[in-house]
Amino acid sequence: MSTTFIPARLEMARSIRQMTATDLAAASGTTAPWVSQAENTKKTPSPELIREFARVLHFPVEFFYRPVMSLPPSDAFHFRATSRLAKKDEATARSLSMLAIELSDWIEATYLAPAPAVPELQDLLDSDDWLPPEQAAEALRGAWGLGVAPIKNLLQLLESKGTKVFSAGGPLQAIDAFSFRQGATPVIFLNVHKSAERLRFDLAHELGHLVMHGGSLHVAPGKEKEQAANDFASAFLMPRADVLGAIRGNLMLEDVLVLKRRWRVSAMALNLRAHRLGVISEWTYSTLAKQLSMAGFRRGEPGSDLLIESSSLLTQVMTDLRSHGQGFVEIARALDVRAQDIRDLMLGLVTFAMEGDAINRARSTANLRVV
Image (cartoon, rainbow, N blue to C red; front, side, top):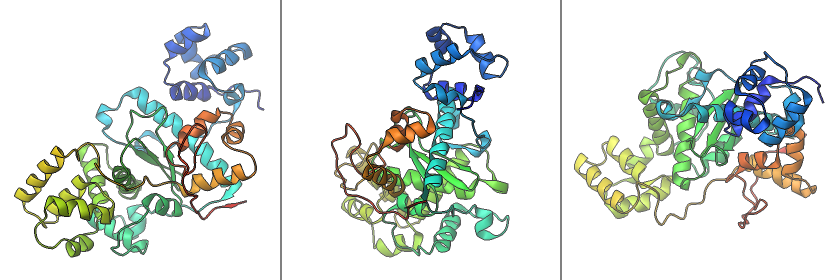
């Protein structure tokens, strides 16, 4: 273990635990200005105070001596509704992202995982031209050889292209899905407390950001950027040609409830997509929207039997570890964090029962081998 205190680790730990400098100071017997100076390299805490920080923040002492990597700049993160995002929640998201990257690096060093293959739009087109979201989604489907068929498992498709997907179901429940690139590696965080249909849409939405809003085509946060990602997600999950071929005549409520299963999307998303493609009239769209809202489809997907998509990558990692009598504790020791921190990053994404869970699902397969 290094003997050099890493100030960034203190801020990272405090953000993950969602404690202010004042909170930490009060619990550890120091002052908020002192904590701030320690985080800004102006003062170095004694070994005794570091141990106290570790106790209060529930991190191993070794965590505060571990070298830290730099994250992408702030504008490389794609957050939803940034105008309403609390600063402390954004700080938590960035700090947890750092931990997720360290977990990703551990996986890469231990297993042979798929290489990153999610292009940015300028690489997809081999130019700096801009494409509307509809055409961008079609271009990516073409590059990946997907045609216009429905995508059975979007999460596992993205993992096969080298995307790392983590859960925001622990300390980040107040934050919606977000994404960024760490070098060439796309990273997506999901708020798993949603229906399976809406999680798929969130994945496609973040894919839209990763493809359209990086590099030389960077777009400032705002409603226009979010709408573009929504339009991309809609077109990627429900290709124009497939929708036009599948919907014959006018839509009724019963038709929406049947057809939404084809593309594994929410009823509301399908209604909007059909309207924007000109398949149904404004009156039919409005009528269906009211009927769906009255039936509870604005808040969820009543009666849906669609299972939440699981992570092949994380499931295979945990399955392999368990086959050797290991688990979250061993990963946590390697990263100098708590086992619960690793569990939180996988919450809702691993397909077998974790400690304390009552669900036992089938094992998933993945292109993953031990190095």
